[in-house]
Length: 242
Image (cartoon, rainbow, N blue to C red):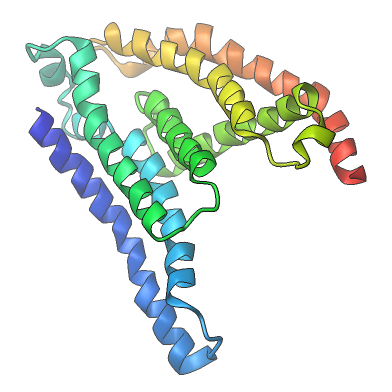
């Protein structure tokens, strides 16, 4: 199974790497048409960032793609493996390739702060992974992950403002610790809902098995939304006045 998952993760990676074709196209366009004098590394970095973002979401959201496509959940659940090992085998190859992309980004100095950006990509992957059982469309998957990440980012800004005074942090951008706290507030209940659902998953329709999301994840999301609605105005007033 692990070999199959590595092959599937590699396929997803190669599909995302198609975006890198834009690098020689952009350089050729600059050289023969617009003459802006674009630097190769600048173009590479500009294209590489969306590549990692797309792979982070795409690989996590499609963890169960083959089972959904081939209606093979019954086969997956009949394997002589614990549910924990099944998830481990599915996640490991995707994490390996995501970390490989991050290593490449360090080599080409794509990011100023690799820890913050690395954390962002891990968060994107985990959000899409924890929603993967529910997702039926890649487009809606990207929209849902984007909204969830916006919620994390907004809460991180508020946490950074109220727990670490602006005069101490000196920046609007949330600190690494603020991101961790905000991400945990969403990912922990979402992860628990995902695990309970998968642990009890059977061949019945997925729609009949999502109660953990309704009773664990959804209330947590609503609380975080209320947190943003109630406190974000005060944070925004400070940010605009700064």
